[in-house]
Length: 259
Ligand SMILES: NC(=O)c1ccc[n+]([C@@H]2O[C@H](COP(=O)([O-])OP(=O)(O)OC[C@H]3O[C@@H](n4cnc5c(N)ncnc54)[C@H](OP(=O)(O)O)[C@@H]3O)[C@@H](O)[C@H]2O)c1
Image 1 (tube, rainbow, N blue to C red):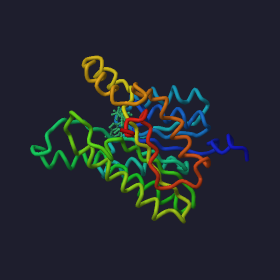
Image 2 (cartoon, rainbow, N blue to C red):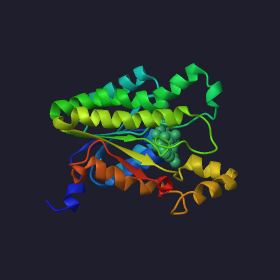
Image 3 (cartoon, rainbow, N blue to C red):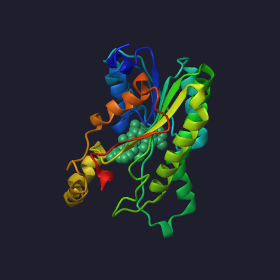
């Protein structure tokens, strides 16, 4: 098998939580371009349908499942719906997450904290349990958890530290599951994105250009990333090209974490 053939995902199926927009959509596109069929999970049927129609133009099978995975019970139900589609999942991308609020830690209401930890951490755990078990039974699979540079770092000038806390924990879960499943054919890795120009970030930075300048000044490459620049990392970790890699975090941040 040539090296480029090792990246080929033909005949595999990938489930991407939050695959309808943003970084999840960009990774879904890259996985489909590499040959994978897709199952996209999200809350809104309209954006899922648009993404499914566009990605279907790559001549791949695309299924959608509607559900808010930030509630563990609904995350489990969403996975059951995915499994009921009858296509064995080879690749699971746990992409849903976000900071969402800008509350000082000393004032953070505990109920809200728990909900946001469920969004960023428990959603991935539930999907790993539900989708990982059949992978273990088949002895084959690749799980990719989308963490953040806010896992090892505290981002300057913003609050909402549930985000740093749960992304760090997701990195820990990635390593621990990778260890537990290493001899059973299922690899578990993470991608830690830096700052990317998703649509909400573009809007946010257009309203606050000084924040964009400050953030970019901290990036050795001097610019934010384009969502499409994350896709190849997902293809690498999903495919046999990374067959001897498990428990790793691939940082894609233009060098943000270098200094
Ligand atoms: N963007 C960045 O610069 C950046 C940097 C570092 C890390 N990350 C991480 O990368 C991941 C994706 O970020 P993003 O900026 O692309 O996210 P986003 O724009 O907030 O969300 C994109 C996708 O997630 C779905 N989604 C959101 N909440 C959901 C929920 N509770 N249940 C089911 N689906 C949900 C959205 O669809 P619906 O709205 O239809 O549900 C959409 O498909 C996150 O884990 C984030 O922490 C992003």
